[in-house]
Length: 186
Image (cartoon, rainbow, N blue to C red; front, side):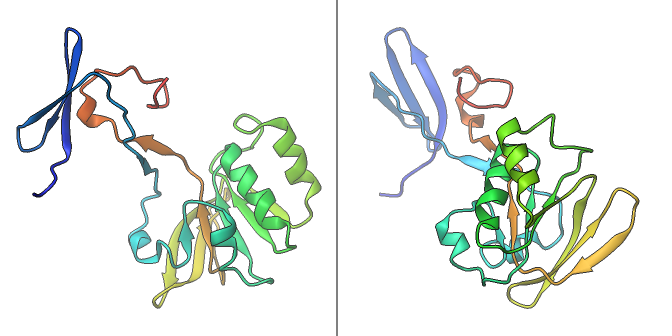
């Protein structure tokens, strides 16, 4: 039997149901919703080509193990997840460039993370800066960014950590579940 995806959550008095894409409905007294998320991604023409081979959406020990001791890395984002990734990745002494579109981190990041970033000599915060191109042959080899002055520069950097948030896969719920202002379950 080929599994169908969920198409709609139904709520009939005391029972729930999950209507599948094929039309069948599965009745249930309880529904656990674990829909996952879609990462927010910058609009770069060839981003998909480098996902998993230079572009990552997590900064865990698994991704960190792929780095060389002297590799420079980029962390994109201005919220706490980006700050945590930058601090984690800088612990081995490698240079970490934090690229932020806004003019500062103070509005979007916790004070304790701001202090840790300021204290880490390996972290360089670049405000009003965004990636404009990715290059490589089979894996990421070079990143081009534009800074707040409009200057464009290319750098031999093979690892980019996109910490730009995610949105819950909730479209099929048809407003049956209350979400917060960030489109997450409250």
